[in-house]
Length: 418
Image (cartoon, rainbow, N blue to C red; front, side, top):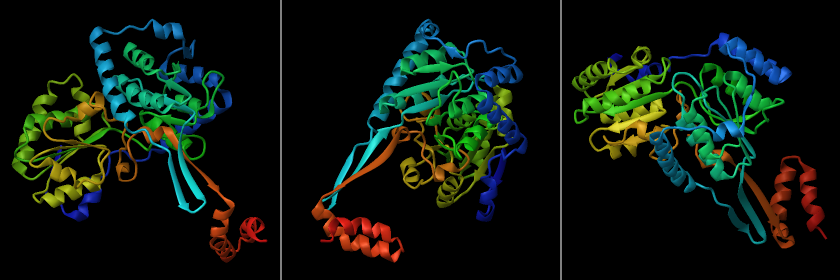
C-alpha cells in the first residue's frame, strides 16, 4: 500500500479515484453478448456457456426436485438460519407505509407502496460463492411481496441453492455472466423477463447491468469492485484494522482498501500487521494485488479525515478510533458505516441484519444500498371533490394559461364554470 502524508486537498480527487476505468474492450464484448441473447434466447445462452465457461448447458433451469435434494452441513444450516432471522428483522422494520394527506379541503393525495412484480437476482460464481448475497437480496424481495423472484447463478454450490430455497426464490437458472443479465432483461424461452435486476458481479456483469438500465430494465444501483475505508488512530488495535482491510482486499484483485489515520506511526504499525496477516491467508495472492492499488493516508486534523472520508464515499466505512460516534455523525457519504472497534465489516456482510449490497466507486454520494424501498414503486393517487376542485380552480387555470397549455386549463373550467 502506498502511504501519503498529509496530502493537500487539491490532490484528494485524484487519490479517491478507483483503480478501474471504463474499458472499451469489455463494453464491446458485452454489447455482442446482449445482442446474441436478445436475438437467439436460450440458444445463445447454451453457445455462450460453452464459449466462455467451457460448460455444456444441458438444463438451464434447476428443477424443484434438485433444489429439494440439496443438503448443507448442520453448521451452515444453523448459520444461514440465524443470519436470516436478523436480516428479516431489520428489513421488516423498513416496510414503507401508505401516506394519505388532505392537502386542501376536498383534495386528498395518497402515496402507496406497490411491490415490484418480477425481480431477478444475480449471484456470481468464481472462487467465493456468495450465498450470503442470496439472503441479502431474496429475503427483502419476499418481505416486500414481489410476485416472482428468479435467480441466475453459475455457482452450483449447495450453500447458494440451500439459501435460495430458505428464502423462497421462485425459480433458479444455471446461467452466469453478462448473458444472465441479458436473459433476465430481455427474457428467453426459459428465463422470464423481469422488472428489476439486483446483485453483484464482475466487470462484464456490471457493464451489462449499466448498459441495460439505459432503457430495458431497472437495476439496483451502479456498482463495481468492493472497497473499504478504515478510520483509525493510536487507540486502534493494529490487528483489528489490518484484519478489516484484508477482509475486503481478499474479495478480488480489483478491490481497493483505504486506511486513514492521524499519524505516520499508527499507519506504519497497521501496515506491518497487514503484511503479517496477509501471509497467512489462503487468498494471499488476491489480497496482494488489491493492496497494490490501495493507500494509507495520514491526515493529522480530524476535520480533514472526516472530509476525506466523505470525498471518497466508501462502500464500507469502519470507524475504530476515539469517540467513533462523533465521526459517524459527521459522515454524509458512505454505503454502510461500522462504528466502534467491535463492529467489523464482516458482521454486516453476513449476520448483523443490515444489507451488504451497497454502492461503490463513489456512488454512495447519491445512492443508497439495497433496502426495502428497492423492491417497491411509490405510486401516487388522488381524489378531489367538486368543492375541492372549485377551490383550486384559479390556481390551476392561471398556471396553465401562463405556461401556454390552454387544454390543461379547460379540463378544470369545464368542471367548475357554470
